[in-house]
Image (cartoon, rainbow, N blue to C red; front, side, top):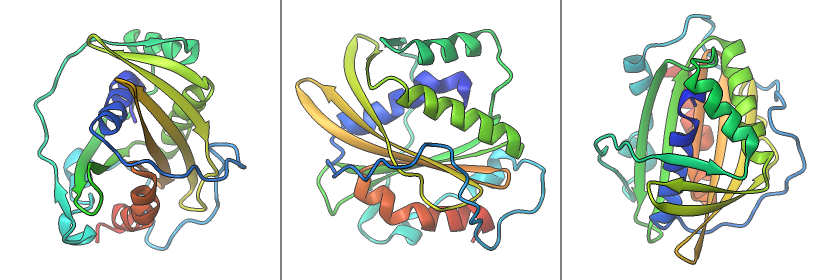
Length: 230
């Protein structure tokens, strides 16, 4: 997830919540974020060379991987709503670093979002990034630490305010390093829960966001395909 687009990443997660992601039960928040699991799956890329955006796109999950209950959501044209973080200096600082052209930046990216018909309004979003392993680890840890460092803050997208509460979750024992958090979004008087899990394997970073149950069901499948391309 680019430091340069941290506010945009929050806006994407917020849009998942606002569009009606189903609620889930928080997992046990026992472990700190960013703790390497040391359990890299077979097929992890050995090369230290980052993959291109087109190569990453070929490693995203598809409807065939997920099953007949899933439909890929068409990508919308880029929007440029002003996004403001209120009440979280750590995130505001990341935004300032980005505006100044900070060095933490993941240049290669591919994304996909799927609608799940098995539960009304549920979505799951997959993002793949590629950079050197040290940059992926440092950048991701910094973002997750900043986001979970503020238990409650507000995101204003255009003119729409969204209250966000964050909670660290136990990182899954996957890849070369993993992070996980739960975000509760409150907009228009309604609460929605989005789980976000990130896993680094070699020079690839996988971020899966959406309904907690869907994230838990598909993160390993997404990691396997991101690692091997199959």
